[in-house]
Image (cartoon, rainbow, N blue to C red; front, side):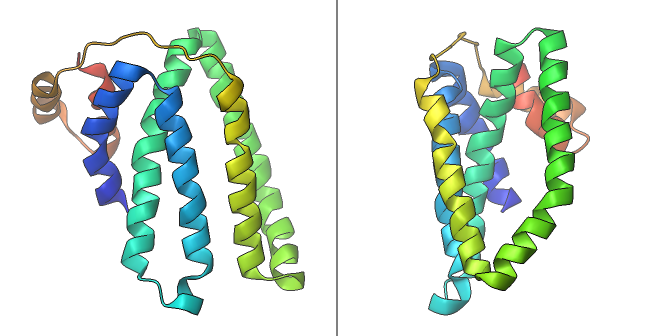
Length: 168
């Protein structure tokens, strides 16, 4: 999962620097749908967990870097802080409510239905992105400078991922 996501960082960074973050974010979100659907039928059809992990890694690797780049481009520092705070607040509330709601759905309907509902909501979340403007601020990107910065300062995967977009 994370190996695939990490391997995708260089090409995703290059693509995002060329075309902007909206299209890679849409592709990433749409890759989450088959990940959830494959996960929902893994036992029924004997699908390889490796395949499910690879599809999930593609989602992880393609979505998150453009998402963070998009926040940094469209927001001032204060707006970015407010956006991230709102995202964290929603995450905390969802962390409290999701097990209750998800548990009820899983018990009274089925665990697979829960994943199908999640996949449907995920697919629907692309709709606002389709209507948002395509904002692209070209950023020069160099694989050579990225690797030299990583080699010089890499201390973990968070730094590794952060430097891909900041090493122009």
